[in-house]
Amino acid sequence: MVDRNKDVIRETDAEAIRLARTLIRSARFSALAVIEPTTGSPLASRVGVATDVDGAPLILVSMLSAHTGAILADPRCSLLVGEPGKGDPLAHPRVTLVCRARRLERGSDEHAHAERRYLNRNPKARLYAGLGDFSIFRLEPERASLNGGFGKAYLLDRSDLVTTGPVVDELAAGEQSALDHMNADHLDAIAIYAHHYAKADGDGWIATGFDADGMDLASGDAICRVFFPEPLKTARDLRPVLVDMAKAGRAAGYSQDR
Image (cartoon, rainbow, N blue to C red; front, side, top):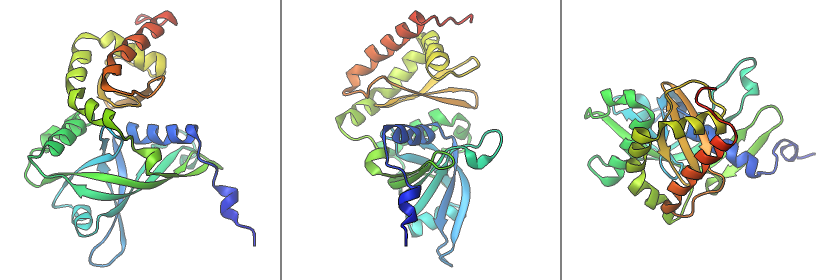
């Protein structure tokens, strides 16, 4: 018999990895699938989502929810991200991550950092994030299945999805001050990143996250992802890269009055 799997799955390349990371970094909500502890049956629900600096998904969930009890009983879960657009929803890219959920201890530095990242992405969640029955879970990706559209299937492993190295902790330590500075003093540059690099429309763009690969921007409920020309090697590289990208956008003819 012919191994049809070889015909379906394409070789994972840089383009597929970038698409998967874009889908994950750009998601504000997702479908979470867990294992129901009393029956062993699959249980799927919708959750809000953000990402940690290294790219691992973060969710904020109520302890009263069925899916929360399920991942406390069995941390194995999967997450589907990728929003359909016009036309056939199956023609649009999406990625399913196979993960293990880990609850972050409230009051820990890790929890404070993750909560900050989550609320930067989902500011409306401030209404309930501090309630005692809500917890943040970090979903550790083990592997993923990317469907980039008809005939574009890829298998990815953890190294394709999560950034490692000292730069991750370095960026995490200084990220919020960088975000505050950019959003207070350089909204013109952020507009260039959104319009010139992400080809996004609309005004009011702010930065919500920096990581080694790029930046996340938001305008109301709209989200866009901008990649750096090259991944950052150290956190010190962030400022010059942002300056160079703004200069390049202006030199290419970008105008806020376009």
